[in-house]
Length: 86
Image 1 (tube, rainbow, N blue to C red):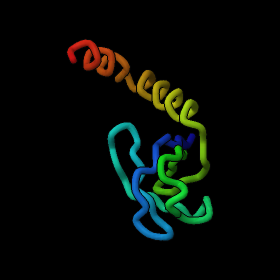
Image 2 (image 1 turned 90 degrees about the vertical axis):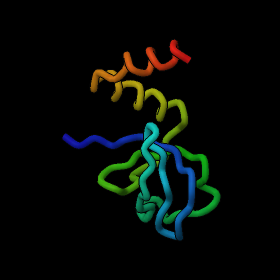
Image 3 (image 1 turned 180 degrees about the vertical axis):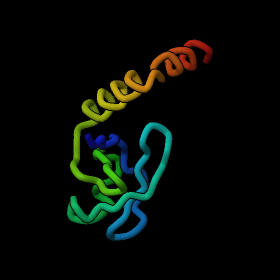
C-alpha cells in the first residue's frame, strides 16, 4: 500500500521543483507530473508521493486527509493539547 501526503505549495524553487509544507515539514518536491512548477501554483494543495506531486486537491481535502493521517498515527491528541495550552 502506498500513501500520499497532502501539502501546500509555499515556494517555487525552479521550473520543476516547489517547496511543499506537509504538516509543518517542508520539502522540495518534483512537480513534473503536474506540468512543472509556476508562480500560479503558490498556495495550492497537492498530494505528494516519494518526492513527486501526483495530483492537485482542494484545501478541504488536504486538511481532512492530514487529520485522518494524524489520527491513524496517534498524533491527534498532541494537536488538541497544543491548541488548549496556547
